[in-house]
Length: 165
Image: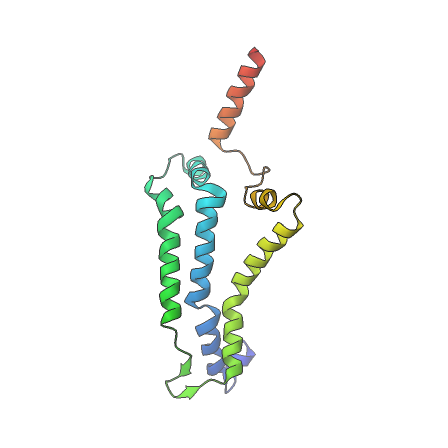
């Protein structure tokens, strides 16, 4: 709680930040983006390998379908229903906030997702190559990531085979 919220109008500011700043719309959209990145860009199979390296046990195949299909669809569906059932904020169902407060709330809701999307577009714009090459480059995990146990084994096998030739 800060100084603005401790004054006479603090409860109004607190409710505005609570209703919009940590709203379901922002969190659902960020979860949607994250699940798409894990399932499709980073790759569900690579995520399996990373978890196996950390826990010495491979997760159930069910999680692959969750990361790729179930979670994004559930987040998207919930996001759509949330937006369809949206009601402007009122304090005690009596006080109606002014329009500038709703604008501030909309800004709080969209700030995080806009940053993520803007960062992706900037990376896409500043990369070199054709649009298809840039998109593929941006959507591929960095080569500097630590190798998984599976990748190290494949590298050792290929080195042994190359040494034998």
